[in-house]
Figure 1 (tube, rainbow, N blue to C red):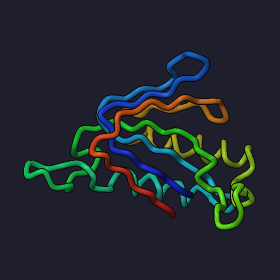
Figure 2: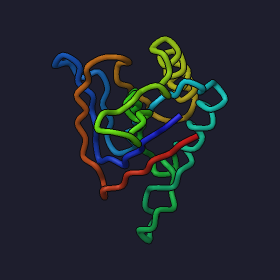
Figure 3: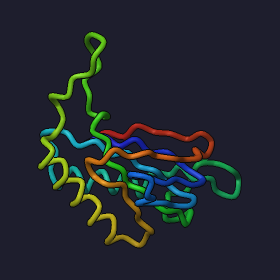
Figure 4: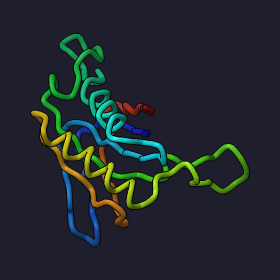
Length: 145
């Protein structure tokens, strides 16, 4: 499972000119599900995202996690994160989960996140999404479980 987290001032996802998810300050998580991922990896990824200290404390150092900073979380499925880009000029997606497995694990991840004490918004799995964001910093990290 691969997560690309971006600390944002705000972010939103638009599908067919309709905003389907929007947050103020927090984390935009682009989540890629690989073929061998399971619910254990989903839980570990969520724990990593929620506990990763990327928000500034009173001294301006990245010492606070999203919950300590009072941030919100926007979760967007992003299958291209699992692409193999090591050869040639075209990405390969053989490491990616099937659409059914990917959706099931994405949905499971979202449900786990909703059980936490944090505002959760989502994109729409499999849709042609337009993601708008104001990256804060910019601060972006690649997480892999």
